[in-house]
Image (cartoon, rainbow, N blue to C red):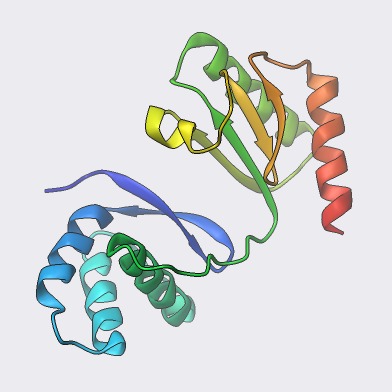
Length: 167
């Protein structure tokens, strides 16, 4: 049983889905000759076994799962627009990386900011960002720091700037 959690965009928010990799593989075997609507229903059915999907966003969730399925098959897909503050920390989980994550959580809490905070530790995923060191901090798609744990005041300034640009 696959207990790995993958994060996908659902309704503009990062959402963790348990077991998605194995579900995508299973559905790819089953879906030969099936219509997209049937595939979406099957994806939802399998994901709901181990994940809670609020009924109000069932269709949005289904579209997000279908998009991930198409990516799994290697098809070109248009990414969903991201809503709200998106913060990414890149680093293998070393002391500096963990320190940056804790500092960021503290600053976001002090500023009463809601947002998606993701810590990427996989070397292949980190490489996709093209940064030349860790820890790295990315706020709303912009690399703001590499190789350091910035002071709280600097993080506050970056977050304030990112929130102002979203308004």
